Length: 353
Ligand code: TXA
Ligand code: MG
Image 1: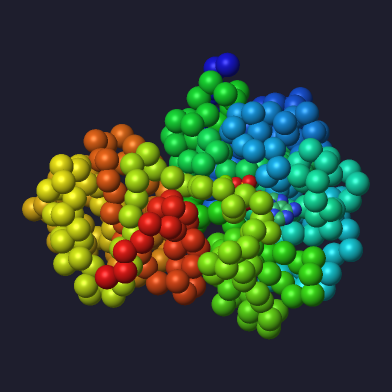
Image 2: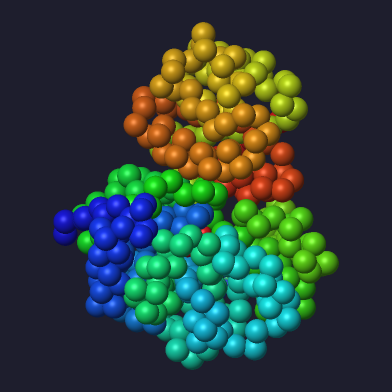
């Protein structure tokens, strides 16, 4: 299959409008379309068509027990797929949607069993991205979409990264430029007595608490040895090809710690890549060549780090690096989402400095 990439950055332009119409008709006819959102690129299918959704699992190599979330353009579409919507969900929708948040709600019977992995619930996401909502409207149905990467690989935040994983597997990629947030939506389970974060994201625990008062973190997120409630969170994820080790500790001590660990690995004959702040990357100029130093932004600038983290991980796959060292950051605010992804990318391989 030939994969076409159509630019929709200028959303009002005729070319974007005809690309959206083409995407809508592909989706309605049961085909897959990759599209931008404010978090990461999604791999979309008609969410009410089980056979179309099956193609998502095939294109990604995704385990079949991992449910898909449904993307909607407006409140009316939410009503079609979710029922018994509790007051906490109403409050969250009013405060944060459209935006980078997915709510777990009880599902209606029109949601195909194929996409829920046998659960009585469905993930509902109304993206902030105008491009994403325009595409959903063009399709006229809720759009099932996981991140548009091969299963286990870092999520794509540019159309080029989608193409890298999906070339030849899908007919169309809509290119809306780089994604604003860069990490997947916050997943909040609204089916229990207290709202529970199943996956941290750009709508932070602190923001949710302000609206709801009480918010729990799924115990699996804080290291408890239990099965995560979001099935996808149990898989190894976001992994670059070279093994990644995270250095965690005081920012002021980072550069010196990196220097020690880089030297040590280089002595063992390893080609070391570093994924770190501007500050640490600058410090290590003499030790690590340019192409093996990828900066994710200034130390502590969580929005910049989130926006660059996946593309930096992906970029190492084109280098000779056979060992990666990454710089950890705080776990407050957006930092919780960043560190969640980095811990997964490193398979829990961490050195505390
Ligand atoms: O930002 C995002 O959410 C992106 C963009 C494309 O919208 N999508 C995304 O989808 O990250 P995906 O499939 O990569 O991650 C969705 C996660 C998975 O871990 C899945 O197991 C979980 O949501 N999930 C889906 N339905 C669920 C349900 N009913 N209950 C609990 N977890 C669910
Ligand atoms: Mg994903």
